[in-house]
Image (cartoon, rainbow, N blue to C red; front, side, top):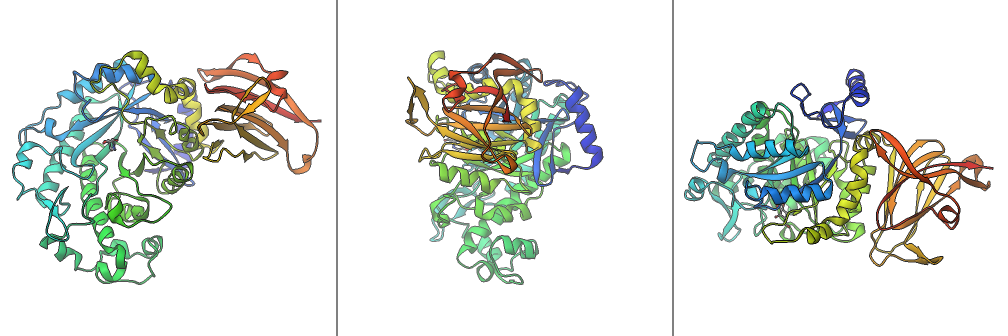
Amino acid sequence: MIKMTKAVFFSLAFAVCCGNTFAQTASTPIPQLIEKDGWHALLVDGKPFLMLGGQAHNSSGWPGMMPRVWQSIKLMHANTLEVPIYWEQIESQHGKFDFSIVDTLLTQARLHKVRLVLLWFATWKNGSNHYMPEWMKLEPAKYPNIIGKNGQPIDSPSPHSQATLDADINAFSAVMRYLKKADLQHTVIMMQVENESGSWGSVRDYSAAAQKLFDEPVPAELLKPEVLKALNVPAGSEGTWSKVFGDRADEYFQAWSIARFIGQVAAAGKKEYPLPMYVNTALRDPLTNPPATKYESGGPTDNVIPIWKAAAPAIDLVAPDIYLSGSERILKVIELYNRPDNALFVPEAGLSPDKSRYLYDVLAHGGIGFSPFGIDDNGRGATETELKEELAPFSQDYEVLSPMMPELARWSFERKIKAVVEHDDHAAQTIELGAWQAVVTFGTRQDGEKLQNKEPLGKMMIVQLGENQFILIGSLCHITFHPTGKNTGKAWQYLRVEEGCYRNGTFKALRILNGDETDWGGPAFGVKPTVVKTSLTTR
Ligand code: DGJ
């Protein structure tokens, strides 16, 4: 991750003014993450980029399946495909690499003018090792699993196996070396290292080798005052894992061990080709601090982010996979993963209507992307109409947001975006905008009557262009304003309200909204998101 200096800022400003949206030429700079005052941007071709993504099903990254994946990407208006690449396929014979699938993905993504995030399904996939090549699966003594507390076998790889680490480093380095040569256009913009690492069924490895490490002193990296503070442990604590971390010791040990392993894989890959790299998380309930027996232990859950940061500096960000339900829970997750040391990115969310609105909240937190999981037909034989319907909650937003992606990415990085999403209680919400306060009410209107949304699916994003000028993007809600500060209590009205869209960096008005469209507690936003440019005045 690069800190923004003046020089970086000016070259970025130049690229924003003069670059085009999808250059993919050999002369563009490598994608990188930058940070300014605790806010982040992903630069692609030197410009802030917002991933409006979609993730393929687990077994869809095969040439025969890709036509249906591209069909979904197109229907969604997505600009980024997240797609797995499989260790078992790339190195099916020990030491012999086959990158034909990488070539296929690169060629097809360029044809479809879509960027790629490649998911390295290797030592961990959802806590297990099912993507290890067969030659490793057949040598369990050399590439062992962890062992449970009572000696029971656990379907999860050991993070303490040097042989497994060496093999993964070797394969991932080969992938990155290949990409460096094959992808001069930077079609691939990020790498996910492993998938939802951690272990189900045992909080940690209780093998003799692991136990020996567990009984040793906690490594110095975790005893730094800022790390201990973040983990709610008194400064100056030292000694064994149990002594320092008490009843969280087992989980913290597992998190440290896995993060060290994956951090080394990422570092080796970056040595070959330093693309931004992240890990994704099977979340825990962020509101109740449950014990690690209740979720996948050792992955980058919110409570162990400081351990992951200390153990795996080559990992640029840890990312939440959002399958939880409930607005309070999901908004908390977004808050916890948006940190000055962690760019916010949601690489997976359930492909259900209740998840799409959180994209707005991610943008308001300076997030770099969002992607529902399982966008393709997955061999079901779904008709195009069925697919369209399934993808609609996301495609309706992407259709409106895609053409203005460069502006949105820049506004988000410049902290110009605020957003509210409807909570489970449907209550109205306010947004402070300096000289104005916006009040967003959720629902629709029929024959003058206000109707509450059946599901809490409403959302509103406001981009502040000037003191009195705003872009509003939303659905299933109404918005109105109050003057604040020295103008509190004054009469006000809309100077102009235009509905339209962004094309090539410019707002194009379709019509001016007035009369019934703005008078009755409006403007109103229906099921399909719309873009409105408005200016306000007091009288
Ligand atoms: C989360 C995983 O990261 C994905 O690969 C996939 O298995 C989904 N769960 C399935 O819901």
